[in-house]
Structures are given as C-alpha cells and as structure tokens.
Length: 125
Length: 263
Image 1 (cartoon, rainbow over the protein chains, first blue to last red):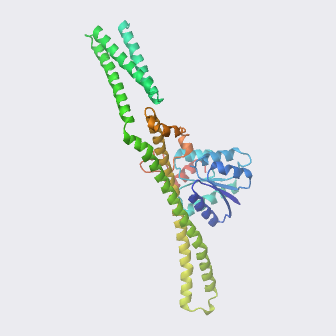
Image 2: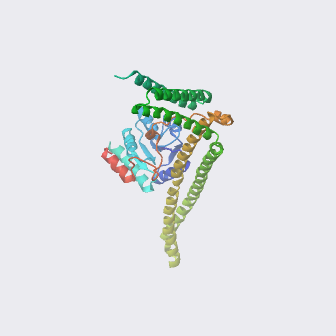
C-alpha cells in the first residue's frame, strides 16, 4: 500500500512517517502542501492520504476537496492530522468527505487507532 | 417645514462631512498636497458657517449647538492633521518600521529553523538507536531460549536486556512524538511573524504618504493579499487566551462531534 503524507513541517512528516512504518506501512511518499501533493496523487498509485490542514499554497481542506472532486482520486481514504480544532472546521472536513480526523498533538496509539478505523470502515462499506 | 437657514445648514453639514472624507482619502492615497488643500477648504467652510450662524441666529439654542458642531469638526480635523504630521516625523516609528520589525521577523524565523534542526537531530538519533535496541532485544530472547549452558547471572542479565530494550524503544517513540512541539510552536511563530509583517507594511504605506526618505522602502512593499476565509485557511494550534470561538479541546471531543455526524 502506498501512502502520501502531506505536511509543511518536515519534522511532523518524519514523525508521522515513522509511526506509520511502525504500524506496518512501507511505501510512504511525502509532500509539503496541497499544491505539491496533487500532482503526486494525479500520477496515480497512492492508496491512502494523510494530510495536515494549515499549509501554505494549498490547504489540506482544499486538497481534500480536490481529491473528492476528481473521479480518478475520489475513493482514496483521507486522514486529516492537524492542530485545527474548531467545531466548524471539523464539521466542514466531515462534510467535505474526510475519513478520519486526528488533532495534534496526538499519541502513537491515537494515530494507529484512527488509521485502523478508516480501513475497518472501508472494509465494511 | 424646514426654514431656508436649516436647509442651508444641513447642506453645509453634509458638504463638510464629504470634505473630511476626501481629506482622509487623499491622505490614504499619499496625496499630501491635495490633502492640505482639502484641509484648508474645511477650515474655510467651518469658519464661514460658524460666522453665518453666529450673525444670523445668535439667540437660538439649537443654532448654538450647530455652531459648536462646526467648531468641533474643524478642531478635530486640525488635530488629526497635527497627529499625522507628528507621526510622520517620529524617528522612533521610522526605526521601528524599517529596522526593528524586519529584525523581529528574522529572529522568529531563526527560532523556527533552530527548533526544526534540533528536532531533526533528535529524530535521527532515535532512528539510529531503534534498530540497535531491537537487535539487542532479539538476540537476548534467542540466547535465553538456548539457555542450556547459561548460568543464572547471565540469564538474569539477558532478561534485563530484553525488558530494558523494550522499555527504551517505547521511550524513544515518546521522545520522537514529543518533537511535534516544533510543528506546533512553528505554526504559532509563523502566524505572529505574518502579523508583524502586515503591521510593518501598513506602517510603511502610511509613512510613505509624506516622507520621501522611506519611499525606496515603501516601493518594495507588495500589497498584502487579502486573507482568505479564516476557517478555510486554518487558525493554527489553539493559543490559550488568544484563540476565540468554539474550539474542541481533545481528541475525545472531536470523536464525539464526528460520531454525532454519523462517523
């Protein structure tokens, strides 16, 4: 399974990448905002998108909307890992088709649990 | 029915307000000469109106307040002009705008870079130590399983290695996660830095209106793009006492909200 981790902070990308590897994922690509992530996604082969919200260039929310609007990409599960914690924002992310939402700072267990939940829900649907 | 004097006063009144607005527009656009001319017109109209009110309606109480209004508008406009002039000539404002603020932004950027470097160093060390500990742990388990020739001390030691390396691996994971401070503090710092830049740009635009010395700096300023919708852009991490609105404080709250939305 190929995963794309999108965050403008390289330290956070590295942390998330390490945790995902510990969970068992091996092929993990990185991008530093929505603008650089979109061409990677459009090239094909990405099975799971983990993205931050607040990024320069193109935000994670706009990336999510672009993914959902593209028939080629619309079925990719998206997990948002962000410090954005306003009720309206979380509701907007949900309305835009996010599959899971993790608030920073998070624990390794929380990330694992949310990733598992995203895939469990996909299997049941 | 309104008297002809009252109608005339009302016309003068709106003319005066229009002129005051024109004065501000000219100032904002950096047309100091035109602003001066408008100010002179305001003063002229203000005193003309005051005189005519005084001569025509000395006895009336309402006219006295009308006279008072014109005097106040005139005084306020002069005061605004004086304040603007002293602001433009305040060297502290110039220094703050041209040196201190860019300096502050650089310092903040430096903090972000330093913390980023430190966090990466820490994670690199963890990534280096982890496989070493894993090897130790696996080897200790293997040796314990082949414990035919081992004495008790050695067996205890292998057990210690196995359990300790497991604990240390867990601790290292927590240390790695703790490096998220770099992202969270970095986001806050970047927001403060953007705010400082906006204030700096606005001050420079203001100074440009009458001071030629700052013109070269001001020419370099790009107009700050209007902020996109705040929620769409993101607010960054919650800052106690600063973040306003309905903020969820924990992952549990987020889960509850999502659950209520059918997740």
